[in-house]
Length: 289
Image (cartoon, rainbow, N blue to C red; front, side, top):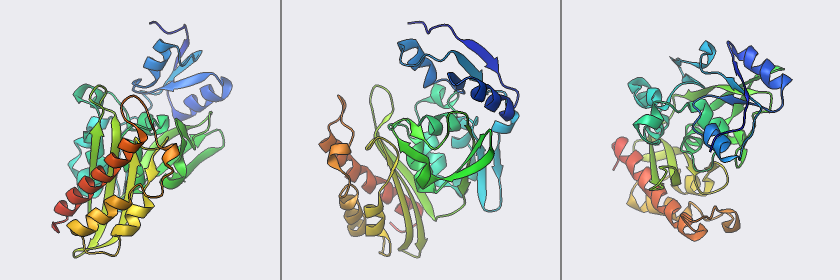
């Protein structure tokens, strides 16, 4: 199908994009286009203007700081996945980007588009939560930051307002080891369930754990029960099993996603299994397992 007619505007700066969004409530930003264009062709989205932010210099680049790395919203997945320095600084984020789609998708899709779109089956929301990232948002009232735990509100809903845009993601250089494990949809590559883990270790003891999941609920979700089960323990097969058993223990089963690909019950089984895999991978990288 062909999309309905629309106006096209190429933004030269972040302020240009904000002005366009503020003056036209029906306008949509276009970055990589992987989410927006299919919904337009199917008739699920019908914006009367597309604001192209692809050439906005402020939204590009990976800047490695002393304690964190700032990733521009227009940075491609492939650039994140191939950044060896970022893999050392924030392993879980770089590895998750490497598992998105295929070569074509990773060479076109953007970090900011993925996170701001907030598809529950996308990979990066879980990594954002596990990495404890900070989102940089700009709008008519200026710039602000949003913590990972406050960013995702629901299905395709985030803290970014209608006249705002996500400009960058800032990932702290914390944790000893990270990992991402997912069960991909065989047709689309999206996650039926994905689990991202960042562990901080003191010897073989887990002093801090952040675990984020996608594909389970209607938005990226922390798994606090799994975190509590593994923190303060010696990382081992037994402690990993305890954490995986706890992964979905307090999630409301009636709110767990259910579709033609997987029932809610199956997704919860996958959640435990992939929590175990991600923790085991992180433990191996930390030299403990």
